[in-house]
Structure formats: structure tokens, C-alpha cells
Image (cartoon, rainbow, N blue to C red):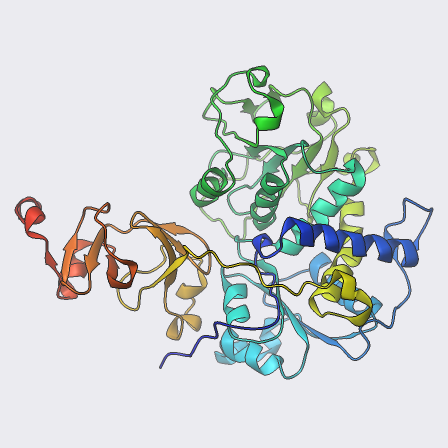
Length: 473
């Protein structure tokens, strides 16, 4: 039996960084500034620690539901709610909850909405936060879903960059490390593109490059070009939105020599050096033994002279402790900003009376051209870490995709892109391998292979039958 998914709700969810407009992000930052000014400790202008309690959220309860370990995200959210004067109920260990009995996310959040006013969720499967948001009427905040996104970490990152540089536009930001599995990277790179930063993406080792679906979105939705220029002097800096670099493509704007720990970049300077750890818990196929450590020698190049070093933490061996004493290392400041930023986000989402000028109330405008394809049979998301493959959740989740062209389907949960091998027309019961054939979305049926189409009772279009029979025989 399928659950009835909810399609409308009055509250806002933060599942991806795209759930916030640029103006809303700036609004959150303005409120975070107020918390720092009124509750911060330390010297004026440099304070980053919050002390004391406001009565703003008195009577409100936040539920923190963590299916994965967390230090900074969970504690900062819980601290933020308590600093606002609210209360927290938490499940920091999934083994103590009914998930061990097989309870689904949908059932869990529908129960929790009777106990709390908002839910902060972390889960190892990508798209779990979207499921939670679909099945509850209270706000859901994604605290990290597998390797998908971590939007509130991005808010902390952007806030740190703004406090340090006064602006986000035009910054040269080098993203370094596990670009393939790092959810903080995936949220941040979209936000940086929106705010007009120049992004240099450098994997820690071969095999850890940005996923194809991330790079595709950068190019198609954010207008970021993969430039083949050998010198950025040939390009107006205002037009350089992203530079995607891999060690195996020396024709691009940057080269990475992992053995000598040298980075040669045809940019005048690097403003931000964002380091991430190898995500060994998510990737068992990549060799991490040659993952270089960022130390003072690594940053000795003159281009890094004034670069700020950020890291979402925790770190292992990829960031030397000697950077802690370097003026460029600001990652503990970055972590400290988690409390005022998350205070501001919660106040805005919960429409607290004192935060009414900062409240996030308007729903994001839906794209009128956005069409949805539900694959009740056959086609599935090909991302094995998608929530639709979870044994508990797959019983009620229908693989669903946003549809732009027959060649491009995007999973609504994990946002991986899928290219079906064959498409069919549910009215004529015919199928074809010609993905350019125009079939109305309401009649579209997608198949992973030809046998799947035949098993569903579809026949090949006559124009392709002879060629197909040759292949099959």
C-alpha cells in the first residue's frame, strides 16, 4: 500500500540551499548580526560566541533527529534553540529509536510533528530530508543527507566569508578535497555560483572530482563555463563563474601535482581555501592513501598569502594542526558562527514575533515548466545511496523525477540525473530508443533496458523494429 504524499504545506523547509533565495540568505545574516551584537562576547566587532538566553522562542520545541554521528551541527542547533529560549527533544542515537524496529521516516516525522514545532534531520541516505519534508506539516531542516547536501553548513560558510571579506561576489574560492562525496561542497558550490564567486575545484586525489550531475547543474542552471583557456588573463574575471579542475586535464586553468603538493593556478590570488576531509565512510572504492595534507608548506605559494583557510570539520589528516596558529586559519571561527546563524534560521522559519521582520514566509515560486515523472514500475534512480533504495523506505516511495527533456530526468530526492535507454508512449504502447522523439510527459514511460519495455507489454515502433531485431538476434 502506498502512502499518500503531501504536496502542500504552509511552513517552509530547508532541504537544499536552493530552498533559500539570495535575499533570504542575506536576511538571515542580518539577524545573525543582531544576535552577535546583543549576545556576543569578546571585543566589539570581533565577537563570535553567543552567551545568555532570549525569550523569543519560549514555548517552542525543536526535535533533532540524527541517524548519523554529529558534533557541531547537532550541538549548535540545540544550543541555538536553547539560546532562543526554546526547548529541545533529541534522538542522537538511532539505536534508541523505533528505526531499529523498521519504522519509516514518514511515520517518524508524522509522529514528531505532534511533539515539536520543527525537525532537524541528519540521515546517511541521500534524499531522506526531502521525504521528511513531504510527510510533515512543520518545518524540516536538512542537517546533511548522505553525500547530497548540507545547506545550513553552507549558511555558516557564507556568513564566515562575508564577515571576513564584506562581500561574496568576485571572490576566488578554491574547494579542495573530497569533491565527490562531500555534501558541504555540493551545497556550497551552488551558493558560490549564485553569489558570483570564481570557483576552483581541486580533488584531493584522482577519483574524487565533482559528480557529473553537480557539474551539469553548474553549467546548465548557473551558467558556469568549463573554460579551456590556458591563462585567465584571456578572460575577464567578472565572467569567470567556475573553473572545474582535475589533475588529468592539464589544459584547464589549474594543475594539481599531488606528489609534490603544488598547485599552479593562473589566478592572481586565492581568497578562500576550503579544505574537506576524505569521506571514507561513503566511498569504499577510492584510494585515499595519497590524499595530501594542507600545511604551511602547502600554502607557501604567494597566491595563498592572504587566503583564509576554512574547513567544515571534523578533520583527520588533511589539515595540519600548525595551521591553527596561522592567521589564515579561521575554521574554529567558522564553527562558532553556527550558533548565531542557526538561531537566525530557526527564528525566521518559526516566525517568532521578535523576528517578524526577518521571517521567511513566502513559498519559493514553482517553475511552471517543471514536470514530474513518477516511475511506478521499472525505472529506478541509479544512485545506490538514494533514499528510494532504502529497504524500509522503498516500500512506500515511488521513484519520482523532474522531467525537462527525454534525455534528462532528475531524481526529486537525491537529485542525481538519469538518462533512460528507452522511452515509450502509454497510449500507443509503443517504445523507442530515439530519445529525441516528442512524447507528452503525461504519456511518457521510461525504461532502463529494452527487455523491461517488452515485459510491460510495449512494442517497438515499426521504424526501428528491423534494426532492433538484428541486435536482439
